[in-house]
Every structure is written in C-alpha cells, then in structure tokens.
Image 1: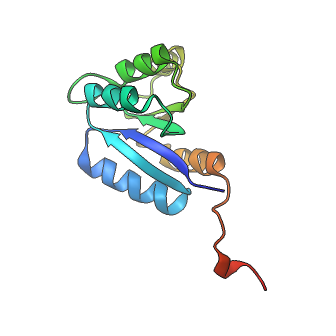
Image 2 (image 1 turned 90 degrees about the vertical axis):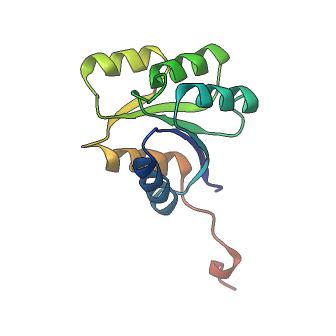
Length: 136
C-alpha cells in the first residue's frame, strides 16, 4: 500500500521537524507539505484542492491565524482529506469546536503523540513491500 500523504500545519520548526521524522519513520506517512500559519495552509489547500493530501494535521494556535481558521476553510472548500488536530490545548471545549469544524480527532501534544502515530499508521496500512522482500 502506498504511504499516507499528510499536510502539517505547525508553527514550531522543532516540533514540525520531529513530527515529520517520526511519522515518516513509524507510520508509513509521506509528508507532502507543511505551513506555519493559517494563510499559507489555506493557500496550499486552494492550489491543490485537497487532492494531494489524505490527512491534514493541524495545530490550533499559530503565529498568524489559527488552526480553527484552517479547519473552517477546509470545511467550506469541501476538502475530502481527513482532518485532525494536534495541540497543547486539548480541552473539552476545544475538542467540541474542532469537531464542529470537521476535525475527526484531537490529540494532545503532551500526552497523545503515540496515539496520533497509531492513528496515522492505521490509516496508512502496512507499507508496500519491495521486490527484494518477495520470496522467489
């Protein structure tokens, strides 16, 4: 099976780099792009009309704009990709707000990173096997 294509909206370069490396190594994910603010994420969605990503992983609080704005734009555009939130502010109220804007899941950055990785791995399915691993 081909890798799950992910677009990540995260304003921290350190978190973004670690998240990309972890997802690509452990969950059969190919990160097809990223944005650090709402405007760049919405611009990417407009240019690609959601066809380039299977899942959007969105932080709520960004340096410019918010992840809620990204979720709202994706909902208004009818983006088919699944949308999940990765935030330090995973309160019950925030979870409800994200769900009302089309987020399938909300993961707490400090406690649920492994759950996000497992979620992506489940969506991706097993990695494609190369010819070298096919018995003759």
